[in-house]
Image (tube, rainbow, N blue to C red; front, side):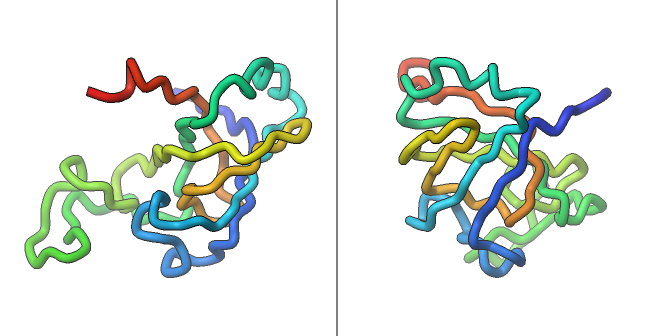
Length: 131
């Protein structure tokens, strides 16, 4: 398996305790910078007001299979919760697009730490992504 980092995330969150528990709880602005080699993939992205961002939580623990969710007392399996601690720390975050300048997308609701590797961007499509 091979993943290609397609960009990097610039955010105000330097350490895990800085980041919101869920991105939707924050109005802070982050920048999603797509590397020049992948910038052609941004063609027509301005049609979408919301995006799904997949990024690598490179500072997360990878040896846990159970964690205690916020506000709970009992551990649960990591595949049943949204803990960053997991075997493959791939994060998925819904963001609201504020503006796009060249290969940089300015968004809110992103909970990524500053410097997180960007893995992919997908449009949020209400008819497909809502049950």
